Amino acid sequence: MEKIQRILIATDFSPRGERAVQRAAQLASEHAAELYLLHVLPALPLEVFKRLIAETPLETEQRLYNRAKVALQNRAEILASKGMRVKHHVAIGRAHLEINRYAQSHHADLIVIGDQGESFVREFFLGTTASKTLRTGHHPLLIVRQEPRDKYKHVLVPVDFSKNSLDALEMALKAVMDASIHVLHAVEMPLGQKMKQAGFDAERVEHFRSQILIHAREGMEKIVSDYAHGDRRVASIIEYGHAPVVIREKAQALDIDLIVIGKRGQTELDETLFGSVTKHVLYETPCDVLVVNP
Image (cartoon, rainbow, N blue to C red; front, top):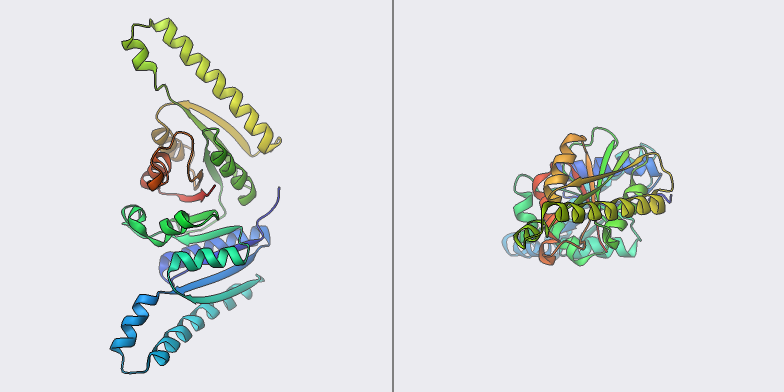
């Protein structure tokens, strides 16, 4: 399996940004990858500072830029002292545009960003940097929520047999080196109640249920065979139930520290919020989440 070669870290020097830096450094160490540290100075506050501070606009902008560059360079030197290959850059503009532009120009395999604090989920869908980066970019985005004390040990990959969910499985196999990978498919019975209401007897409903389960097992066997190629880290799980509930319960039961999920899937209807299942994962699970774009 091909390793990750280039990791982009978007940091704002906050504690959450530091968590992202630490996690990215761990992944870079595992993959012997090159790190790119990026800080984006927002253009709007710069314009405000220019009007408020009794200096020329160029002096104000240069001072803020130099301060950010020194802080980023110091962080890069610490990582480089640990044997890592590190480049750093300070950009000026809209954060999500600069992040995606830099990721594209430097062929990043992964973008790492810290979460947005206690109000992360609410803010995420109202237009934070993370949401805009996902919406406008095409790179896998790792949202770091937990303190990265160790390597990832238990990874959950929800799949619905869509291309996007299979891309997520491929990314999980590529990103984590030693963790166990649980491939989860939630089997729902969307027509079960309607069949009963239409007069189908319990035996007929159960037959329909068993056919869906057989189809799910065949699908899981195929994707594990096609993607995992006998990788002993990978185990498949099939559960009955509503997908968000099953994912949440399995994440807790299996002590999952990373969920890797496709941005959209066959069963996800709300494109604006990246699909209902992805939305629930971000709402209801405390672990890190790696969202894979189509």
